[in-house]
Image 1 (cartoon, rainbow, N blue to C red):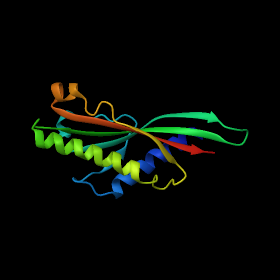
Image 2 (cartoon, one colour):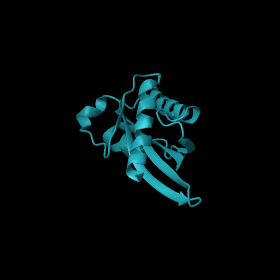
Image 3 (cartoon, rainbow, N blue to C red):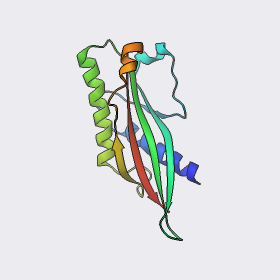
Length: 143
């Protein structure tokens, strides 16, 4: 049951991102392990990855499930400030979407934590000339 719960949360995140409007065109896809060839990275990739699930028994009849989902934003860049700023702004827009809306298709889930640390992966900029940022959204579901 917990695996299907985590996947349902991840699918809700994908649906919400794909229904929203952002400053640039976005199509989110759920992955288990997002891996792309470097030549594919010229286009924007938004990957949603089921990360973890923890359970806390609250009573005999009630358990809290915390489902963490990673939202990765990746694209190879010319390393110019406007392009990197636009990608950073997109990450902020996605985080704001998660913060301001209930989970799509799963309204009983509640966002309890949102993190973006580090804001970008400096080693990806250095080694791959690629912007990579990951937002972790953790939703709580009671059952």
